[in-house]
Image (cartoon, rainbow, N blue to C red; front, side):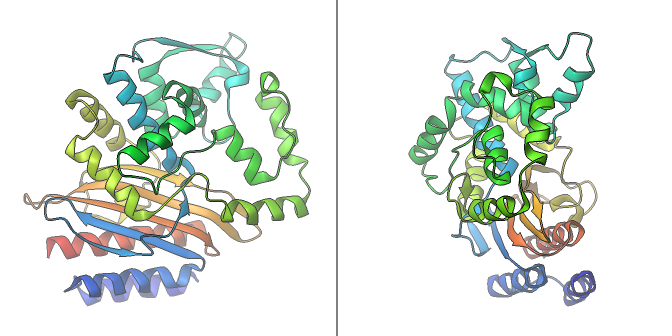
Length: 333
């Protein structure tokens, strides 16, 4: 598998920039083929409106990409005066989440017994820059909750993006935890053994069910349109747009994905997503972002999502990087 991807990478570089949209989409297919599962790609040059795609209308699990529409709606609420970015949130042990969460690490290491007070702005930064799961579940209700967020996406013409569950609910469903403990008892120490105790057969069923679930999914084409709206300043004030793009530009995750395929120093404002692995298959490995092209050539919105890939993480990330490079080369040729 790794050798096949390396050969694809070498052939792609030697072949030079794709000469047409059809050639670019053929390049996407060639890079995606060794991964197994399904790879979805949508790339759109924002200034010209010209694009290319692969499985662009198919739904993929978003994983932490869902934090981007949450952030947009939170900033919409802030622009309307319903949320203040300087307001303090008290974070208690039952608010902490498993997975990637520097806030949880900081809270458990503190002398306060797992309690912190952070501003909404600080929590927003953690969610987007560090992909913090605790931050996402703290901000989800402030943004109006999943139903409101999805409804506002529909109004904005983005009905192919769904936000349905919190990080905690996503974890329960993907692992097959059918009877979670009471919400007030969701401490890290209580949750870890619950996930560890799920039988393998139950996990296998949950994994397959999660991949088939339409909830918390999006199409690559819809995510690219969300990126377009962000870049063009729709729905957000100029200040909120600048803040959002700044935070996306400082994302710490995904250095081996979109950014790795682009020339060093290329500005990329992006949001990653990573699903769980089980028995040699991965739920999803995603990266979506806005690339600033050199020489005043404009901006490229690109979404690359995988589902049910049987390739390793290095191979999945390398493919995302190669797809990004193919699109970059096409629009800068």
